[in-house]
Image (cartoon, rainbow over the protein chains, first blue to last red):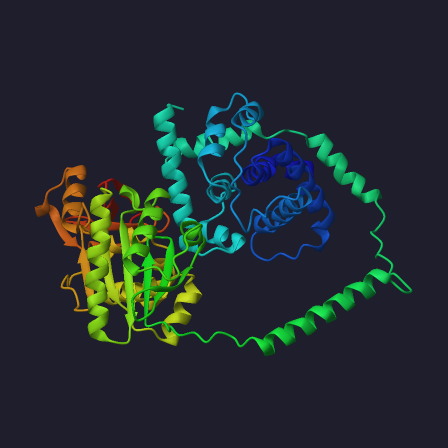
Length: 157
Length: 335
């Protein structure tokens, strides 16, 4: 489990942070995801890539956390509530680019970028995992990239 | 995505991700000690809460039936005469009554839902609705330089009325673009709805309008077959219009209006020219030129000029991809 943690901890954390925008929540979800992987590894039936299975586990944990916090289901409605920039800055201190990424992109855009860039999933796999049409995933990804390029240029990050 | 931006994203997450290997491994190990979760025991005996809940449901059910009988359901006096599909990537479908007022306005994908959020267009005139939708598209970052094409598809039983709609909608949308200083191409087409077309659209997760357009793209190029529909479905409307603009027979059907510039900045001939310049070769050295416009193998789902050349004295084909917009050249492995 230690080796797997070393290998994919950034991937799991990136996805959790992209969904929750909270480092505290992302830390907890990352740990819980590994515990769930460990717990259910024996019952895992290989179907496609194991990464997709891990995404599913993580998604369920994030959903559960949102329910527990009595927040709006992020999968149904985009969260309107924007985090306090000062809190966010404090959480990702020393990483101006990450702060801008979290602030600039919409939840779905962050999600797609994390899965594409950090996890290395193909657009098709992301579409399947999120239950979205491929064209939508591509559009969201391209928009996110354009926004980030603009931000990097404007803020000289 | 440029490599440095990709690296920036990965590094940013890497630096923020905690390394709590020992804590996580310990938490995993701790689950070994946990007893298997017990199934919750069923509550036995009489439950007052349950009884109250059941009784409440019965009372509500009874009231529902009573109201249903006393108040007749309103009979719709307006029926859908026309369907208008708007595709950028957000896909939106409007159904119109005979007065061209919106009966329903629905999103066909998540991006479409985002656009329609807060817009209540039922009963609103088509022109006003178009204004609201195009405005929302623009505000939400669509119809920009990188996303500058819109597909409008109209379905109406009357061929004449369909044609009028295409003209009217194109003119109206162009007017909105002009007032908002948006440079955008529009392809407006007639659609004859069928169960088969609807099923194909559903299978590919796209609107009926985009599905019909894909069929036209496949028909317009010899190297595409119906097997390519799934890959083409992933293309943006902008890329599809770029592709469609480079078909051999550029005449438009009577059921289609093309407005604004949809031609590629860098066409097939210019792409070949650019590759020759980059290689320091001349046209006279080319033995064979099999170039075409197609899908990139270097970038996911992007339309490019595929320049395929064989020079005198060579035994292999040289294959390059040239970006239709920027003219950037990337080499492909030899075919």
